[in-house]
Length: 116
Ligand SMILES: [Zn+2]
Image 1 (tube, helix red, strand yellow):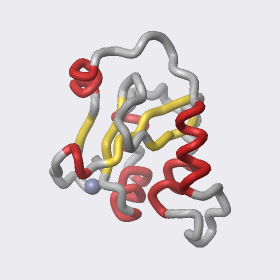
Image 2 (cartoon, protein in one colour):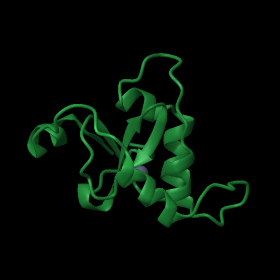
Image 3 (tube, helix red, strand yellow):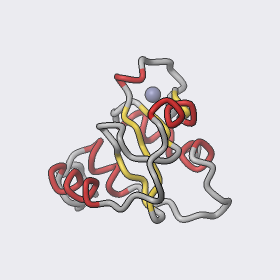
Image 4 (cartoon, helix red, strand yellow):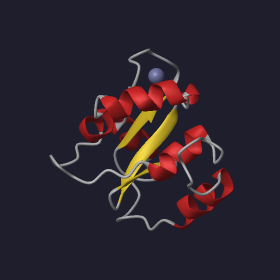
């Protein structure tokens, strides 16, 4: 999705949008529309530059998109200029996230995902 290279979905990091924040979903278990990117700084930066997340996740124009937890997950806590929490903390926060409504089936969820 960021660099437009095709890859097996298992090589990609699923990303969902929660309360204005892009949240990494490495276990691919969170409900809702997801986008998948290579878990690399290059692909993440490309996706951010092209606003690919807003498009892939069908966010309203001008919607707030906070990529902090996602950046931390991909770049790691030691990335320069990113004082965010470490990877473990991001994972803990992810598991504590509320789900919105009943979870959809796995196959239906996958059909919604934008991959690339
Ligand atoms: Zn990519």
